[in-house]
Image 1 (cartoon, rainbow, N blue to C red):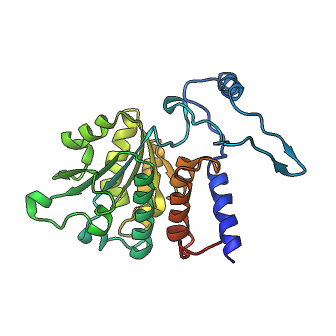
Image 2 (cartoon, one colour):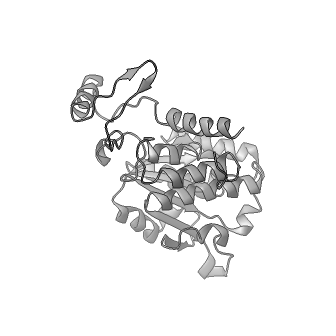
Image 3 (cartoon, one colour):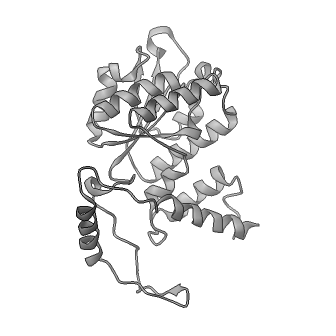
Length: 266
């Protein structure tokens, strides 16, 4: 059973990063030429009888430049989580709360592992003494930037937008409660300003399945890309031969995706 789970984790990592993507503004031929040039500096690996051999110290395919990478990477991404507060969570009905918290936990742990900027925002804490972000989540990233708001739409708060701009990054992994309100508004706004927003759909929720679905549809229409949370660690890791973070991210997969003991021996 454990072998099957380990194989599934490896397969998931591979599948999540193999979808083709076309760089914005480039023709297919220009994208192909960029790939050819990138390959020229890489080790040529050959598979014989189904097994490849690697030179000593092989560290995998080189990371792509942040501005040229069509996928999420540690150098081009930001994690933004909005309004994960106890009273707002109580209104979520389309996903089990335990599963939601598990998935958001996996996201935050992943962001910490890869040292990507993290922005947390909650609403009306200073204004109305509203309950702050769930401590179980905020404690996972003590160095995150925190923004307390009054506006339902975080993109109407200068401090929030300034925090996003300060990262200098354009790929926003954005989650929030509720899907169709406090998440949809800033996600749509960010897309309008040229950001690429990725919403991990299994880490967000709303008061009914209909409200969640409507929120997702509205964001997708605006250009937001729907993903699932497991795509984030797979895409940030990208290559099984990159050893520095591999053990830590495998632990996240085991604990929060496959729900097995991460300390068990394979």
